[in-house]
Image (cartoon, rainbow, N blue to C red; front, side, top):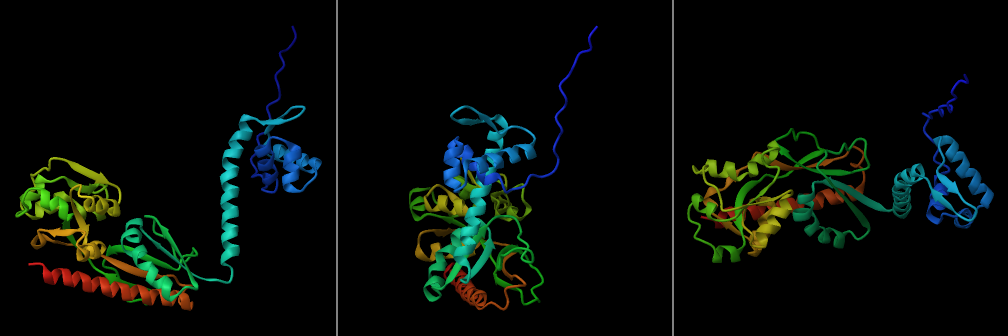
Length: 328
């Protein structure tokens, strides 16, 4: 009785592939034609074919099906294309940026999106007018960036009191939490004379407020509890992910919001927002800090930006004091 035969198991490759053939792969995948890919890369058709064959040998599986006049991607080829195309585009974009900024003065700042949208970006034009030769890059995100290992010069952070004895860390301003609404909403809505009256309005809040400890200071539950009416519920809630979205909803007249005073002081001064029940502000343990990276102290453009930022912070502190002065 003859023995059954089985196909040999293909050898599983474990070594990372070289990146040199990926541009040839991308060109062939784009055109599905070796000749057109060769024209794009300024290579001979046989050179492109050899690069694709070498890549397939490294991957361990065919990436293209060859036909007499054209080629098509295999399933594995389509998977690789999905990964390679955005990766090479990102690399090319980064290289272009490096080439464009070579020899130019620049300052890179990391902060979170709401602070950038509500405080930093609206003020940047003044700095750009006085320093037209300095490029600014703002990276936003919630993750804490390590200034010792990245190319970021400055970080603006939001935290409880920290040791500010080192010259790399400077306080910008503290904060209070205030209730705000649009003038139109207050004009058309029910009277707001006591904390309990707030429950007659739609209340705007961040959806993560009860899952993230640093956001609990912004919760309506805390505000109601501080004012002795924690059992109240509004007719409806409106939830957003970010502070600037909450303030935008308040500006649009969609409800009452608890806002950070430093970030809405300009809107209050302009009359775009109105502070509601000013006698019931809440203190916040959180402050805003400027942290300078260790490799940035000697660069004049970074120092110029820091000086400008501290001047703007002084203006915000003054605006906050003005709001306190004019409120009963």
